[in-house]
Length: 245
Image 1: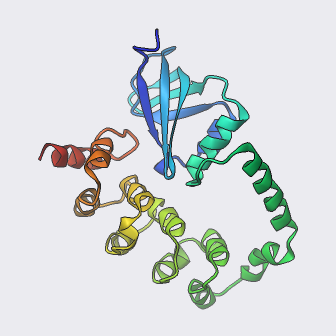
Image 2 (image 1 turned 60 degrees about the vertical axis):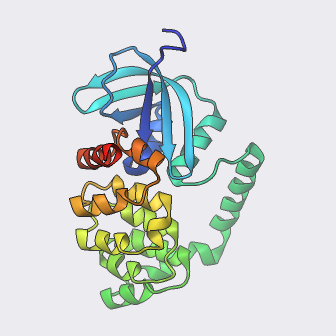
């Protein structure tokens, strides 16, 4: 198959929870992909901070769920860029990657950073909720990872919550609809594209909430939302109706 006729498959990372693990194994699963076994294609990976196209080949099919694609011998730089897309980070140069790795090593050696989890361990429910009002993003992130649903509502009430933190919460398929409503009702958060994409990828988003999020999208993003297979069918259907309207 020549390059002119190679199909392009879109993989939206908003709801891909095992991305880094699958990438390390050399392949990725694309929900809704209907290509035949052995088909060469271009995989367009769409993340919170951008997108990247990589050559790939279908190595297994699982209708109607989708297909597994093997990446065509990606180098270390390409894998790093893909991981950054999944994490919502801008692409970095090799030098920046080395610098970040050195910084990460320094953080691991830093007693204060290392002791955040120790300090938060064993909190009562009242203490967890109180800590959710912290002005330290690192502490809030550690708190959410340790106590999960116990602190979601308290975190969403914290006016200092950052866009990446909101995006992480918006992606959670177990987040109650009333808390999704809190996010949808926050005008400042809804101006952030990453937050909107995370919400649209959440299967618990109600129809009325879907429409309110879609109506905030620029027209070109609305057209993309109508075709991204990793978005729930209800999202794609409503996006198609808005595009036609």
